[in-house]
Image 1 (cartoon, rainbow over the protein chains, first blue to last red):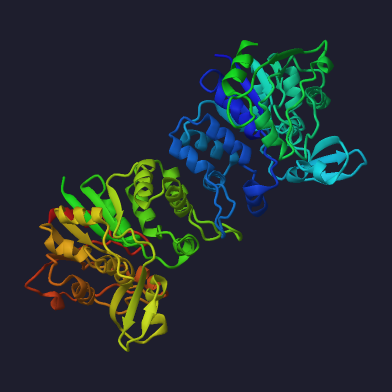
Image 2 (cartoon, rainbow over the protein chains, first blue to last red):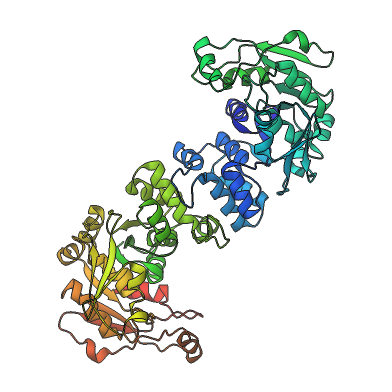
Length: 312
Length: 312
């Protein structure tokens, strides 16, 4: 089986992992800089590594019964002490407390959830903030704030950075170095994908690796973060942090059904324009095709995407 | 193997279960009326059955690795949203949310913890309060308050009762009816043991059962609840709620080491006086002996106690 490393976080990453599960020797490398929601709340209270993306990836790779997966994703809505907490995050926090380390906790959780593959945070450092510098020099701090910068500023992001600068988790570096394929994205550009590339040691390992480097462009823009972004804009942003290292760019060219697009437009989300003409490059090959899932959600189809990745 | 039903809750129950585990076909029947601590907090916020005693029994009967047991008993001490919560209680609450019923949640948890035997709440009704009427007619309401009545009143308990009056969990009734032996206690008299006997259907089932009925008298008095109680006082209180149904009463007659007793006395806890002369009865046989654990804790030795129960 091919050794595939995926780099990302969030919902997009989930589809890649579910598609490649059982078809490749998988390692998911994920961000751990959440500053909002349940993960952010636990981070604030306990100074812990935020577990949101780790948890989602563990569940995606889990071979345990549906009940256990439902349990992990259960979110408390009632008023009170558990409000907004996701059970899986509390589970991970308690495992860290009992085992005494992030590494052991993630390993034990992998066993409890019977995961197929590995899930590794890009760094084990737990007090790291994602920041963005806007065109006018203004600094936006915190993953939740960076993900909404366009709601507050009519400006572009000049660069994103981490503060303080973390070093990569050594096991993640090793997996990247030894991979046959490295799949970056899909996922939230500035808050899930690029943050991995800001960790000292991760982009270096990607460049050194003999593995084929593949970037999967998102299906939909995200309101507040990538409004109006075309496929080439996604790629050029990634290249800012990764240099000329990409070998393949996967772009969906299937147009989504009008009625569904209308629904998404109500939330200011639009299908990413496949501006292939702007993607010509000597460095990478563009893989176009229908990667759309036939459902009420405009997302990547896990099987179509997995096939494209494995066929490369 | 003998079919043994244990009735209780709390630390005393733990020793019985650990001792009989793997030596008998075990069913633990436990109270679910906590009103303090982590269980009480969840009960207050979520209107849920309090899980404290259920959780402890499940852990006692668990065959899973130590890590899982440590995880379940982990209590958050940090300030913040999880303060005082025991992880196992949150786990059980989330299972109830995801499965939709107490029965399924307890069953699934039994599987997750790989328990040997069964753990059943005496009732599935979840809005029940333990109350005590004192000698002067004063009513004390809530398990936590009943367990400390002597700290506030220089009075005896005339009777304890449940409000509203719950019906027994049918599976618990069936196990009692079919048991070879029914072991009541040791454990907190008014807050862990007698509450089971207040549930409509439980004392009736004990009386009907052909099984041998055994009451295990506590090793130590409990400050606020059973100060100055002798062995015969424990038995007479149990008999108030159970009638003449007991066949055997197990009383420890080994005197605890002086230095340990001194330590306990600092917390106003004393060894229960084995006033055997007051225990003569035509109805039951008194089993005396050394049931003391050799440790820094004045508790029943699980193996000595298990042997006595199985030998009857």
